[in-house]
Each structure stands twice: as structure tokens, then as C-alpha cells.
Image (cartoon, rainbow, N blue to C red):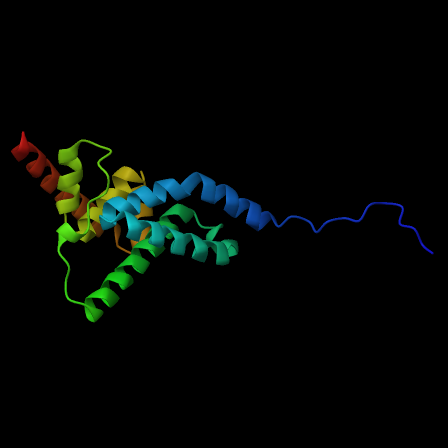
Length: 169
């Protein structure tokens, strides 16, 4: 009978999983908040960030090497939610905004309402640049736009926000 002289080793930890877990802990709340503001629906933002994080985990060997994996996750979540909206519109009549309460107001009420009033393309750019604190290049990469488009949408979005907020005072 052979008696082992050392305790059996457990399988080595996968560094990719550890890296993803750290990424998830640091970025999940921030990406969720950005999606919630952009989509104007908490429930949809939760589903979108869950789906995007699951896809990031499945492709972590690639996503983990990106310059901005959080921007990738935001974009995947936004794409998933956009596809969900399209499917919903095809299958059922349009719903009113009253059916879906806005994101809980954690900032001055006027600013959140003004942001919610922006068209989705401008709201996505403002969210990336202001809430996620992404650079113009990172925002362009995350949203699949040119830097010029990001700059023009940001400019128009901020102009609309200023006009909306100054008219409320």
C-alpha cells in the first residue's frame, strides 16, 4: 500500500476568474447606475447589467485585456436592452412612461428629469462621459461611434440639459 507523503493539492485557481471577480466587485454598481440612468428603468438596468456581466465572464480572456472592460460591459448591456425594447415593441403595443417609474432620484430632481428627457443617443453619451467618467475615445469605443459623434452628442446633450435646468429655476 502506498501512503501519500503530502496532502492532495486542490486545482490551481484560475487567474481569469479571480480577475473577473475583482472587476465585477469594482464595476457592477457603477455600470448598473449608468444603465439605469440611460434606460430610465431600474428593472431593465438590472437585467442588462446581469446579462452583460455574464457575457463578460464568458469572454473574460478577451474582455479582461481590453483598455476599458467597463465600457464594453456598458455597451453590451445597452445593446441587450435596446434589443429587448425592439422585441417588446414588435410583440405588444407601446407603453406610456407612467407605466414605468423613473430611476430613484439620488441627485437633484431637476437634473435627473432633464437627463431622462434627452434622446437615448445623447443620454448614452452624457452618461458615459459624466457618470462613468470615460474619455471621449473610451466613450466612442464603448458606444461604437466616432469621436466626433461623441463630441457633438455630448455638446447637444449638455446644451439641452442647461436649457432645461435654467428654465426650471
